[in-house]
Image 1: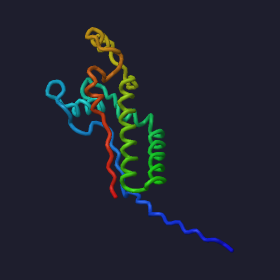
Image 2: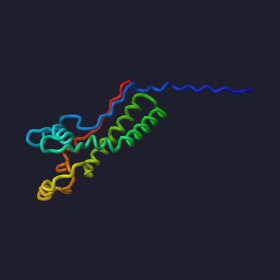
Image 3: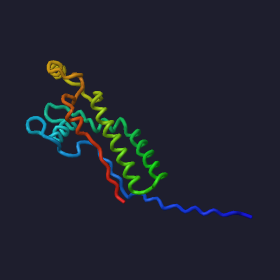
Image 4: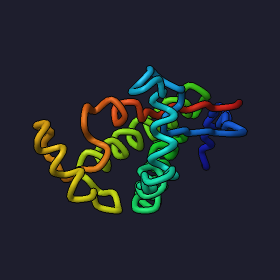
Length: 155
């Protein structure tokens, strides 16, 4: 005699779209000379006049794209194996955003940006007591701390 087992599961509610954003997501506070933090970030990302492009966002994602895809895959797999509903996928996307934003801030803090600072800039930072003086984009930490992440999941 054969036995029969019926398992009922609810369908997985895969989202139609997941957007994870990392960067300066709002103009931010006024920085120096009436410029917002967002405007300052744009200058450093793309360069302007004698300020070279240091591309903190582009260089970070170029270096870590495969790792971030792996993190996202793992988070969404956990969501699909768990509750498999919209809140689970939203939490997965938010975890990816937070992890990417933290990685970007560390990328900046550890000085992983090119080109190197000019010697005159390093000496100026030393005179003003900014340590380490060789790290680009770190003076007060305001710019670095405005790099954040968020996520939006569309059902």
